[in-house]
Length: 229
Image 1 (spheres, helix red, strand yellow):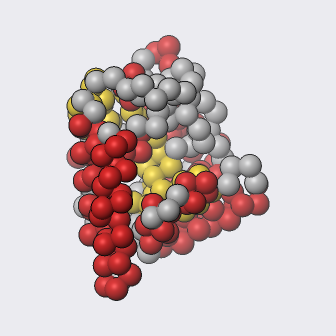
Image 2: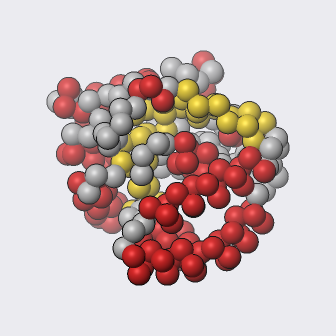
Image 3: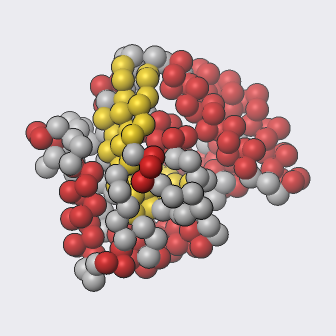
């Protein structure tokens, strides 16, 4: 999978970046990147089942919030979202040649988790991106869970939701931690289930903590009972 991604990046990356720069059209780059991402996942023997797409309305933008247990989560989840989506990404990833440039052109948002002021600025940048009509993918735990249990949520994503009034789609990922566990390069073939839950409207909440609790409960509802807390 990693070899396929690396070769694809080297072969197609420069041409796609040049085309995007000259045309101003990001969609071919975005679509091909998603196809390559999901193709690499399937080449590794990972089968994906998607549920709940009926909860997504065409033409609407959303904030997708998912549990996070594996490096496999983004390449499984992002291509499965039917609309163009930005992502909050660790700023270190933007230093990777070609990939970092592509992410900037795709309006992905860098985030520095060690700097509170920079994290607040990332929330503002995310709000600007959504005003352009994009959706946003966020892992509210901020890092991968080591054992599959939900970690405490960061407050920034919910401040973004309250400020923008964009509906939140809670997402539950199952099976990625088995296929690619944290702290190892070893991968296993297996099945992954991706569940899009019904949207939650931030305008129905006056308190950020209540919105956070509602999203957490929705994500946890599809997890095994021993992994909900």
